[in-house]
Image 1 (tube, rainbow, N blue to C red):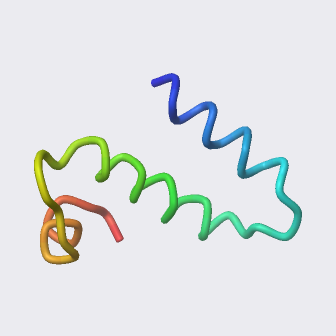
Image 2 (image 1 turned 90 degrees about the vertical axis):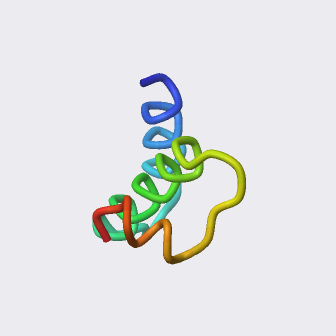
Length: 50
């Protein structure tokens, strides 16, 4: 997944970002790409890990 590696590289270049925030952010990015049409927090909670 190319977008994951690009997002990970961008997050690693930012100072003072914790690993837990990186995991949650990467999961949210995957959900934005995977959930079709409109999405809300209920759907994100259903399909996400966090």
